[in-house]
Image (cartoon, rainbow, N blue to C red; front, side):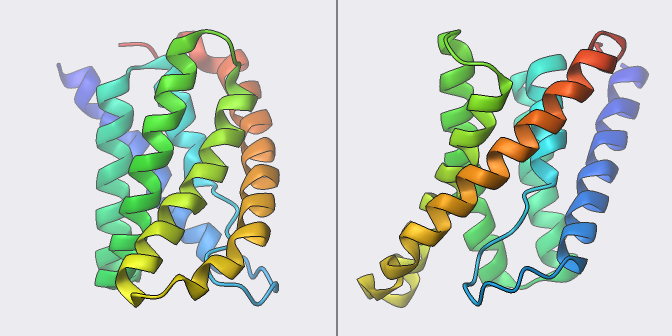
Length: 164
């Protein structure tokens, strides 16, 4: 049990660090919500190497802690909506056994942005924010692809060493 707790703490710390580093990287597209998704590397590694419950717990805890440390209530709402939808889609695709880590991550990037757009429509009460949809879907696919490649390489190199 101590080993599992230590791994969970380590992965939460890594996710928080990735989230902080991501905040420091400017993406000058002029569209809110475009990010690299570095924290998804940690979630994917956990999903493929450790387990679903643990990966989901770290994902949600990271969103909440990052929101309290670096954001606000709205950033927590947007991140939770995108993160939970993204995680659900990635889990379903992974369980299907038809897609690999890169494709699962790409879908996760796309659905993260869809979840955030859905929350934005609810909060703003206007569908005008959907004009951002094409750029957010393309950026989600590209960053999801990049994150998937990185996560797959990490999993291939150290995945068997981090099992409980």
